[in-house]
Amino acid sequence: MDVVVPPEFQRLFVTDADRPIVKVPAPVLRQVAAPVAKITDKHRLMADNMVRIMKEANGVGLAAPQVSILERLIVISPGGKPMVLFNPVITQMEGEQIGEEGCLSIPGLYGDVKRANLVEVEAYDRKGKPVVYEMEGFAARIVQHEVDHLDGVLFIDKVDVSTLYWKDPVARDAE
Ligand code: ZN
Image (tube, rainbow, N blue to C red; front, side, top):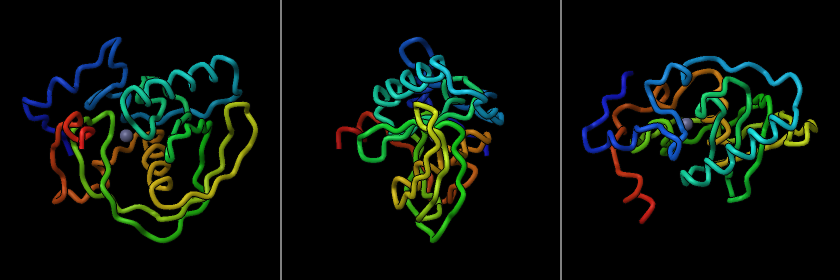
């Protein structure tokens, strides 16, 4: 589906030095990201920048294509502690959960998405060490949303369209 941004939300869709996250319909958001062949200092810097950008945007996850980098890197912050995952692969999915999602690349739009409730993720951490995480509930939701970004998939592709609504994220954060 195409996102038709209401006039009062269009200011949120500006991308510039202060707001580096790209917004729909940027083509980079629809491309498939390439695996990171070797995790170098350049990648660690990239990851640290993404953590900073995610925090500044009050987000709980950010994928590299959202900052115009077509490499398989996501950062997530399910419980306030940021995690860096290079080349994340969801190796197991179990159960089902339905919950509300939004996206820093579609600011202000929210809707219900059905996801697996439990996932196992294999990845490489910031140091390049292989890691395996089991995640449940909200954390599992974030990982699925961010890994989708690496394949050019957005939550609006999976959302129950009858639940979509616009809400100013500033007002939302104040709740
Ligand atoms: Zn997103």
